Length: 488
Image (cartoon, rainbow, N blue to C red):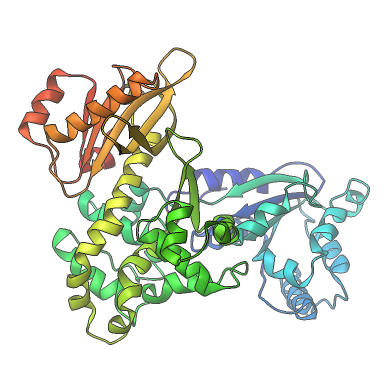
């Protein structure tokens, strides 16, 4: 199937959906499509059904009887019948759905599937029974796709002892656009403006079109004005989006508690103990809320690069970080029209320290993992993380923003590179000396070698002395914003 011209990227997702939609064979098959909200899943599936002549049903949060009525009406319209189907239960509805492919493989999409399963918990078992080999003789070659944004539920559909485990021929997760694709999608050519914008809206496609109606910063001089008019403007959809993201998650019952946990992380508290101290709670009290936030894709939990018994929590959606760091503390002021420019001027230092600084570090890790060439690190990368290195002699510890592990040709994992990321600092020999000291500490422990690369990531540039050192020492790598977006 030809990908629609208006669809940006998503080549891999479209290829997999096309393959699934045109699978030969007389039997019905199942696929599962999931991903965080606002990533364009419905847009993708709607395009697949329109291109292939398939059936699309979007569920709503309602009762089982009402859902069956809506489904019967939608299926009758698709079949060209003047009167709707009157299904008494989902066994009848699924059986009828499995008979729509009269002219060869036909796509049938049930979007927002978790809504249906919530009101009809037996529905996954009913679909499993319909796909059973003993029942397939009454089916037609329907290519059934179940789609949803409730990650915890969608992930459990095919896991463990779930009824549909082993039944799916497709398990597609629609991701957010990475920082390079996001810059292309927003049509921002200036790398610095692209990174600043990404620190607020991330790679969520809906924020470019539906939420800003195509309003993008036109360059460095327009960025501050864009924030005031498109993000901090109480009349624009992005203004309340971070609040709605939590309200839309059915797993989050105590929304106030989850907002507090996210606020703690946005304030720079990455460990469970730090979050607990911020909230005035015991560390053990946070096991459940942190686990739930991780299950719904709101935060990530990453192991320390050097100490496996330590880890860090990070917010997965940049807009949520921006809301808690910049908007939530001054929400009353922002709700009054016309106050956004003044509030943004006051909040700019907070944005630099709590939003763009940590986001720049994350972008550097993503670049090191997915965009940097093997010769940049001196080997093939296997994982990238941040971490803390203890310095007993100095009675201190050192934060490493980027630690690159991989294979340098020895057949075993080794530390290929360590790096420091500074958004607003011009990096010089002092930063290099710090990295050299950390490399010495790690070499003493057998973790690093003198061949471990030293990488300086800067959003403001490098001193001439550091550039001259990098020219004569191949283990020193200088990575600026242009290289992050266009180089390897």
